[in-house]
Length: 356
Image 1: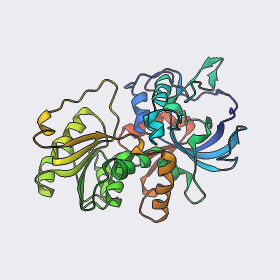
Image 2 (image 1 turned 180 degrees about the vertical axis):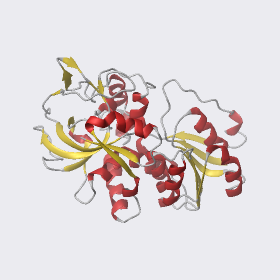
Image 3 (image 1 turned 90 degrees about the vertical axis):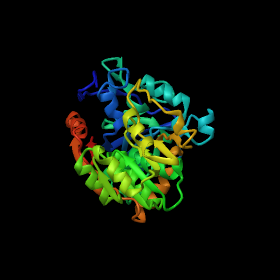
Image 4 (image 1 turned 60 degrees about the horizontal axis):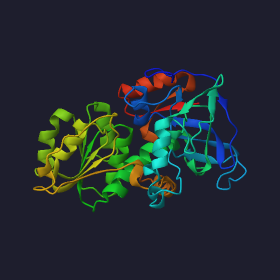
């Protein structure tokens, strides 16, 4: 992407893997909301930049110091390899790593380089990955073993949407069975929040989304009820007059976070899952936290080390508890990546994929 709002396909020069890196041939890449923020110009990123971070592929080559993966291995990409040195990484929260945050803002890999160029000029990486390409060089720790039994187009969803959505419930909220849940936003991440709530034993799950097809999908995934945003008052009060135990904002805008907090009962918890546009600010009423003892918290990438969380998700898939197949939307060739982004922005209920 040379400027927001348009993806172009170019032939880039890619550096060979360094000792701790791996070369991955991408097979399927999901269009994530994080990419859409950059595409819409809501986040300032250096350009030209290769977007994409949610994907699955095959290892083609590894550096001399890599032992965890080998050529031929099927892998899922993680956009948050641990630096191993900061407090966040020592607490098994690599997505909160300060060095990673700096790399994402600068459009580089974790070590500070991009390894990509066009006519001698630097090309940058989206979300420290840049997966919308035929081949990508990443830190080997970002290539997580997949096994043989999950198709690539389904596995791509595990790399970000599933880790984020399911983890928001199981790791960030940690609810007791029988809880009531409100999920605002039934896009790619929101659909996994719904599944996470079902897996955690929710007694009722209300899903709010302006797109009817997304609401219908959420009901198939375990939602108890679904409504448009303008109907939320009547539906919540019919479900739980005092508000829900846990509200999950899978959109992340100030408006949707305020809505989630509004319909969280006294003593309940609101979890912000989606990411806002740069510069967004949330206005809060302190009485929500004193008189009503609500909790407002955030989560990033499922509040767990993806290398630890992914095997658990794969077990859920194999046991039939976590649905992937029906969440896969239309697939576009790499040459049609811009159309894929436009389709996602239009409200496609399934996860839009690009197949390099």
